[in-house]
Image (tube, rainbow, N blue to C red; front, side, top):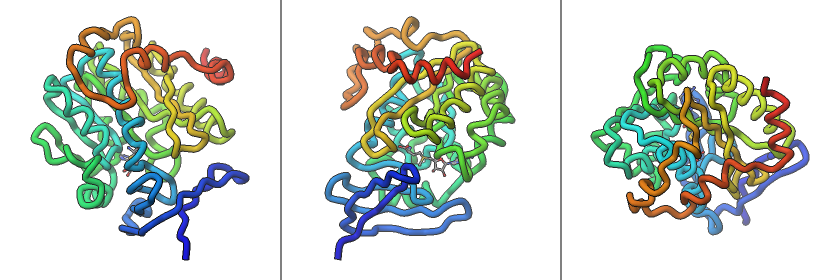
Length: 283
Ligand code: SAM
């Protein structure tokens, strides 16, 4: 008997991955958490039936959400909102300059399950530099002013517990919580399918309303809807490419499998239809 995980990307498009084994399944206070094993993508995590990460392609997302801002400006204090699987924390810990990582994950069960079943992303969650807060990131960030060098919003999609992380209030509070040369990077949905494109435009408009520098970059993530995924880069002044010290980053000798400093520059060059979608919501 064959078992398949299927995710509805639109009402008319489904994406299926053949499952070898169902490893874990729990209903937390916030969402359904499932972990499966598959031949093609290895072990993978889904939340409320949506693909979050797979063993085979999570490096793309976690490298791009971390090394782009860290190359633009090396952060010492970092706030990661969401990210309970630990992949973003793992990449941040590759910089000895990082002194403190506050991880704000609403669902303790995601951290517990990741530590147990996703060692390839959760490896750094017990590091002394990492402080985990089981709270809603929307509320947590209200408490800070001029506190962080970098905020990474490694969230689910803009519905369910993640909805608040795509609001003007949230982005305004992230602006206040950042230092003068701070950077905010976020998971910025996708330009391809209608619903994802609208979510992306809403987020972009709200970020642009709070941040003077508001750019978008892209990566190819096979297991996300359409594979064409975007990230937001917002700051109070730092430009993601002009201010990046690529030679300094290369001297670090950080071994990556997707990110590199040439790709960093190129990732901010977007397809015309994506520029048009962004221009529609920029003043
Ligand atoms: N890092 C993975 C990836 O490769 O895309 C997926 C993102 S991570 C699993 C998303 C996390 O955001 C989930 O663990 C979810 O519980 C958390 N989350 C959702 N809404 C949140 C909120 N309002 N505050 C804090 N964490 C939230």
